[in-house]
Image 1 (cartoon, rainbow, N blue to C red):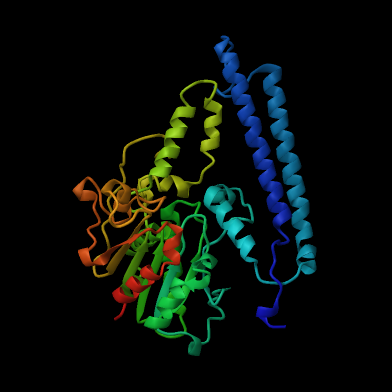
Image 2: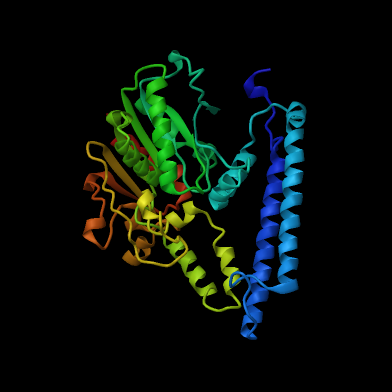
Length: 412
């Protein structure tokens, strides 16, 4: 049976253990929230606090502590038992490719809480991998030289997405912007899958190392690297270049082009709105415990508030505390042709205010690297900027007009 004939899978042997860990963490979080509300009410009546302002005292505190302890012991015990069962389950499960539906579910889960999945050791956390022809690249068995070329296009998805979602549709017909570009311009496509819930700079370090391995182990000499990045993927690319410069990696030496599709270089107002929710929920003693709900969102999401790309932008800071933009400015890389595609759902001749709103997720000025403070502007060359009208954030991946513009930019 060929790989293409294998059945697709919605489930894996480790999913039971992963769900057990998720349920354990969720139960503990709800219990902590309930105790916080309980203690907030007691404090308004003049009762003293427990070990911390959110903890109760005496018998009540002991009950909450017992619930947390039992939950953790039961959850870890079940997870340990399922770990021992996994080899048997792996032998029983169908050895098929991962289904598109499963990949999409994991992408969303990792985007929303991927940092927590990784820190808790949950097997649903997505590792960063490079993929060629839908298979994870294994440098012990690299692709055969006749199937690849020296010009490589690295294709990077955005928040809550995966590499399979570059396959989309336009007017009912299948479209893959990356594959079309590769076919026309002679690139070999290599896709990146990553945990978009991690800090952008953490993914930047990981991507820098992956690209270093690629240029070292690619079956033929890499003569040119180009990057096609959607949304958060553009921030990860910029971060990876900085990480490579700090570690004297040599892959930036063959990097020729970076195309940013709807990248929030200066952040997204939706995350800034989420930060306001943190502030509002924390403004009264009764609602303060519920602020933890807003704080479930991942480090990757909070990095989108202002477009953080460096470790220094978040290390030593409370990412849920509202503060002005204090990130370190990272200019576009020298010697690399950088192109910015921005989208707006408005028409070209609609009022300026409507056009500036952007693609529904990223404002026009952020996607073009423009900022009210001149020192924070990225300064894309005028002929390296292009606006897609009547286009949403996700529609950038299937727009024929976008495809045509990329063909023009990367023709030689």
